[in-house]
Amino acid sequence: MVKIFSSLMIPGGLVLLLGTTIFFFVELPPAARSFLPFYPAVVVIAGLLLGWRFNRSRIVFALLLLVMADRALALAPQTLPVATAVLMLVPLNLVWIVLSSERGLFTRRGLARLVLQFGAQPLIVAYYLQDRPAEILAAIHLPLFSWPPPDLLPKTLPHSVLIVLLLAGGILLFRLFVRPNPVEGGFFWFLPVACLPLALGCAGFDLTLGFATAGLILLLALIETSHRMAYKDELTGLPARRALSESLVRLGRRYTVAMVDIDHFKKVNDRFGHDVGDQALKMVAGEVARISGGGQAFRYGGEEFTLLFPGKEMAEALPHLEKLRQAIQAAEFILRHPSRPKNAPKRVPTKRGTQRLQITVSIGVAGRQGEMSAEQVIKAADKALYRAKEEGRNRVCQGPGKKSGSGN
Image (cartoon, rainbow, N blue to C red; front, side, top):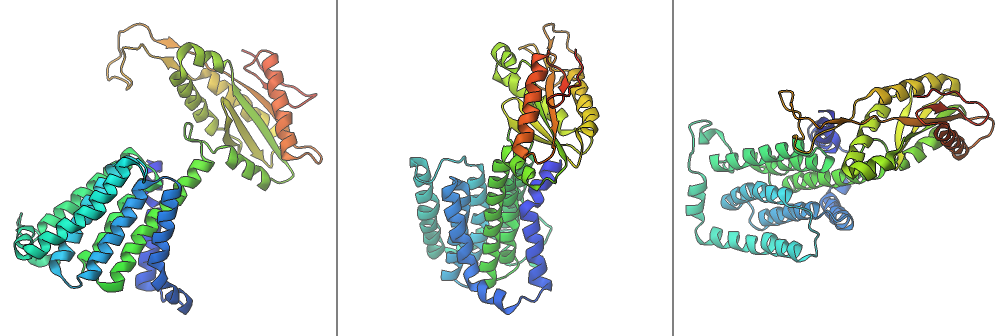
């Protein structure tokens, strides 16, 4: 639930909150007002370049959708059929974009989508709006239910458009729950930010600013996703090695480093397969993430984790590391029978064949002494880790010359 809320609020929710506050309650300084005419172009160009560079075709298509909607309204100002058509087609196209897989821009499928969505579709819509605008508008504005009465709704928001907006919003929200990440959260907020100004009767440059802000949400969501990919390990959810490197730079003169390695992990992979190995990594990562004593957990690589204890001497960190070792040893890791379902059943199964696999870890720990650099402290902890393995594994060993451990 925390991950869903984070994906919902960062950055989309924060941008919407900040933009609403500025629009209604803050008087922009002259320098900011002078930038506003360039704001939409900067957002679109930056978004297209980053979307292309990071191979995020959905971001590119969504930004092109904004440009197409803005140009359609600019070429046909104050035209009710065009405004209503844009308000209905934007959410439909957005759902199409979001549900599509990332296939690249210059692939055969990507080029076909560009031609169909941004070439053929505008021509077809323009043809029918020019040929029979009254009939199309009457069909769209046909009342479908008794409440809310059509007279209470804006002219561009008939029942059919309202249904499309609600369905699209529901699909985007469900998508966010299934795949909580900043880009999916950005697509969810994209819909109201892009469509509500038009539904409420905004026109001209105010409408363009709304479209640009929807594009800004996607641009920031792409940047946030790229940041998470660089600094967070996808499998375990722990901060990755790059985050560790930056944390080491910010450490003071007193700290302790521990290296944690899963015992006999290669044998687990060879015997049970990499899926079981990944599950073992996740289980250990979950325990490592709950380290007490102010420790900070990182995925170092492979089956190895790093723990930082800022401001702690080695003697202060040792009890927490021993507690972690015992918690991992006591944790149950059950290999289920191949015929059993992945999700836990409501009743206890009678099928035999489940196997308990005991996972243990070896831990090496070292504290900074004298003028040791962070790399030297890590090497000292790594050396202690190798000694823990040589002495039988499933134990905590201190830096060179001082050791304290417990066995099976």
